Image (cartoon, rainbow, N blue to C red; front, top):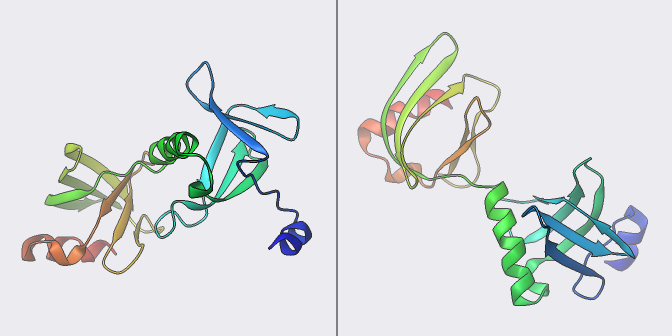
Length: 168
């Protein structure tokens, strides 16, 4: 992996060469290679299948500071800090019930119950706003960029199941 990483120009962040910290403003920072970067943002390469592995650490401008092979390679306290920021970035309440969906003028208007409480949101039709992200799992992105997940479409009632697939 080291030869391939060098050829690709990937700098791996490890517990030996990087120290993550919370900034005074409550954001995430990292010290590595004699420099401090703050804030930094975590981008999972595979958020739906391997959310603890292959995490790109980037500056606010989008340049990559380095790659984390696995959160589990860091001490427990650092791993908890990284997990917290990943949860914030990829926050997506699970839809537990689809109450109603109506479509009008290229938008669908969803009325749902979620793990975060009742929620109404609008989804632009087309453009991959509703995506299958695993066997039976759907990721829905509303017009404001908020994400919602239906963990298993097989668990939907017959009525809910009839509503959702028409938007896929």
